[in-house]
Image (cartoon, helix red, strand yellow):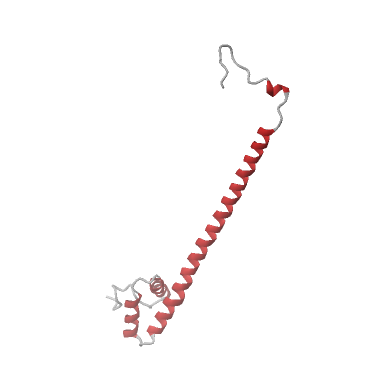
Length: 120
């Protein structure tokens, strides 16, 4: 037995375990328990460390995630706008072609196969 709480998983014995504890605290999962354990093991000043860690780092990560989502929404809107403009241009071109005057060849109509009736 290591003497560390939660089967030895919560400790600052080395950098890796320390980063794991900080990562767990930043996700806001069980951080008060870690804070109380630090206060019991070191000093009541550990509460200041944990509260600042949770407030600033969790706030930063939340804003970072929101910024990524916002940028993706803007990119998607820009792509959709370009696709809409392209479709509108194609519709305008097709409309202009249909309004173009017919040549004598166009006025003859479709060529029908033997026995086929013209559609109205």
